[in-house]
Image 1 (tube, rainbow, N blue to C red):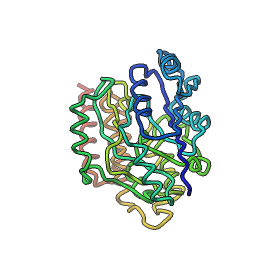
Image 2 (cartoon, rainbow, N blue to C red):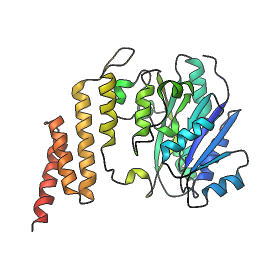
Image 3 (tube, rainbow, N blue to C red):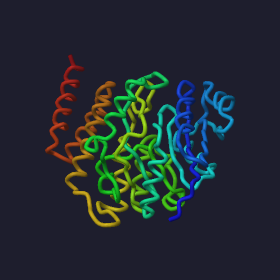
Length: 314
C-alpha cells in the first residue's frame, strides 16, 4: 500500500471548553504535513464550539445535536478528507512525534492498515501536564517491558481485554468501508467493538512508547456505573460471529476468555454494589460464578453482596 501523507484527526467534543484547546494544540504540534483536524461538537451547552470557531480557523468545526461519542466520531469520519484517520478525545493529549512514529511504522509495514501507541494515564483536572511529569515520562519512554503490548493479528488478545485506546489509533479509511463504523447503539464499548471488527481484516500494530496522555478526572464517562455489561456484550457478539481464532492463525483459550468475561461481571457487580444496587450486583455476581465457578473475585464479591443484603434487614 502506498502511503499518502494526508491525515485527518477526528476530535469528538461535548462540554470540553476547559480542555479542547490543549487537545487541538497537541495535534497542531505534530511534525506532519497535510494534517486536517475535524472537531465534532456533540451538542455542547458550554462554549466549546465558539472557542474552536473563534480560536482555530484551521480547524473544521462540525456541530450536531447530542447523539453520543460514537455518532460524533462517525460524523467526523464521513466529513474527513484524509486517507488516514486518527482519533483524539477532547480532554486527552498527544505527545510530540506521535503521528510521525506511526506513519514511519506503517510505511515499513505496508501489510498493516492500523496502528496504535502506548499511553500514560494522567490523573489531573489541570489543562496542561507539569513539565516535571513530562520529563519523567520521557525518561521512562524507553522501558519496553512497561510499554509493550499486543501487536499484529491481535483478535485473540482483544477477546481478553480492549488492548487498544482510541485516542492513540491511526487507521486507513478503507477499514471503515470494510467493517463499518462505530456502533452508535452502544453507549459504551463502541470502540472495543470496532477494534474487534478491524482485527479480523488487518494487523493492528503497537508502538511501545507513550505518545498520548489519557486524562482521568471526575467528569470522565467511565466513572459512572453502566446499566449493562457492555464489555461482555461486545465480546459475546464477537465470539458468536468469529469464535476464538484469529483469521491468520492462533486462537484465544476458552478458559482465559471465560475468566476475563467472569471478571467483567464481578467488576460490573462491584460498580452497582458501590451505588447500592444490590439486586443488580447479586445477578451480576451469579453470572460471573456461572461462567467461572473458580473465580476468587466472584466469591469475594458474593460475600460483599450477602453482607450488604443482611445489613439492609437490620
